[in-house]
Image 1 (tube, chains in turn red, purple):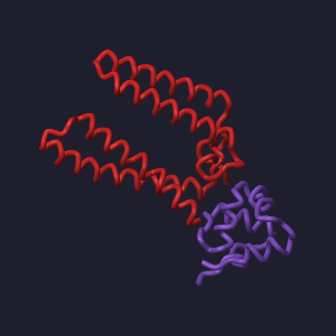
Image 2 (cartoon, each protein chain N blue to C red):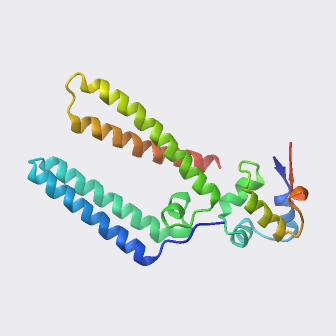
Image 3 (cartoon, one colour):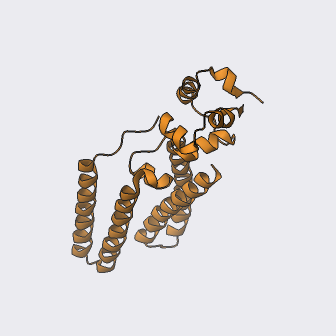
Length: 135
Length: 63
């Protein structure tokens, strides 16, 4: 009834490819003269990778998030994840519309993109937390 | 939907964690099923019925 656990090799590959993606984003941002963006990407990305590694270490002993990250989630937890993903998609659509309107008033594109991404990420995390608490 | 999972589990002296392990689900999911917050899928309902050597209809009841 649960998913196949993520293998150690897949976990290492995930962390390495995440670090590689971070490096590329930082190099491109630096080359474009956006040092602040590059720093933010490196710090935020590193925190995210560390959080994922911590969830993997907790594994089955952890909560819903740890079991989802470790590939040990059961059908109820996968359902919670799908519902949180749907909430996140809805929030991103609303943020996208708001960003499109804001862009009519010369909003910087990077700020609009950031708001859309953060709306999705935060909504997913909050929704997953609330839904897993509700049962 | 009501169910008799808690009663059947306690009759067998199983903890929620032990039942969850036997079914391949988390302790929290067993708790959610017992409290009626989550209705299991058909495969999981069959697994529960098989474990308690009974039928789905004997365990799960429509309100």
